[in-house]
Every structure is written in C-alpha cells, then in structure tokens.
Image (cartoon, rainbow, N blue to C red; front, side, top):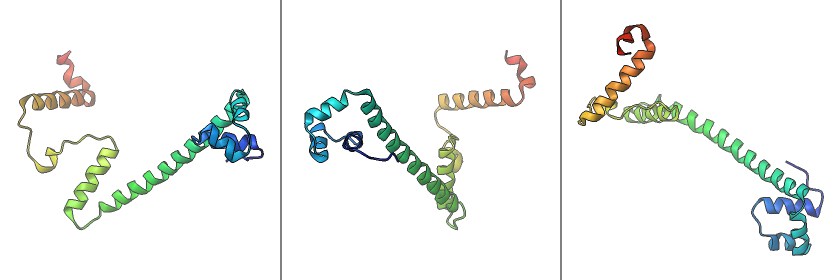
Length: 140
C-alpha cells in the first residue's frame, strides 16, 4: 500500500473510498475550497486513482483466495459418502469449469421438446465434426 505522508495524501485516500469532499475536508483539517483545488490537480487525481487501484487489487486478491478455498471445499465433497452431496459437488465443479451439462443427463430422462432434441443433435454433430473432420466431408 502507498505511504501516506501528508494531508493531501490523506485526502486522496479518503476520496478514493467515496467520502464526500466536505467530509474529507473536515477529517483532514483543511477547507472544502482546498479539497476542491486539489481535486483539479492532475497529480492529485492520479493519487486518488492510485489508491482506488490498490483497493481494487486488494479486493481481487481476496476474491481469488476465497475462490480457491471454495473450489477446494467443493472438491473435498466429491469424496462424500452421500451420493447426493457428491452429485451436487460434481455439478458445481462442472459449472465452475464452464462445462454445460444438461441436468437431465444426471437422471437419464431426455427432453420432451423436439426442437431442443434437434438442437442437441446439431451440437453433437458439430462437436463430432471437429473430432473426426474426414468423416464429415459430405456435410460441406
């Protein structure tokens, strides 16, 4: 985190958190006019941005760490003795991996919507074309 040496830095930090100019002036011990003048300076604006950037990076890092812990927790549930818990954990991991698996595949029941079945069939053909491109030349 950046070092805060002056009233100006204190003001920049407070403004970066969303505090009002009036509140910042009072907390730092300067007039609202001084805050207004500082806000018009490019260096001061850059300092406010620097503090905002640091706060966003801190939040991102916290989210990354939390996400790692969450995935580890879900992963550990794959070893549960309860089949329902294992299924929910597997489904959650697949969703987190952006692997779209229709829920009906888990219960063995196909769609009752013919258009949905047709779209699914088209998707399978497209996927297969990439795996075995030589066998599907006739579709061109």
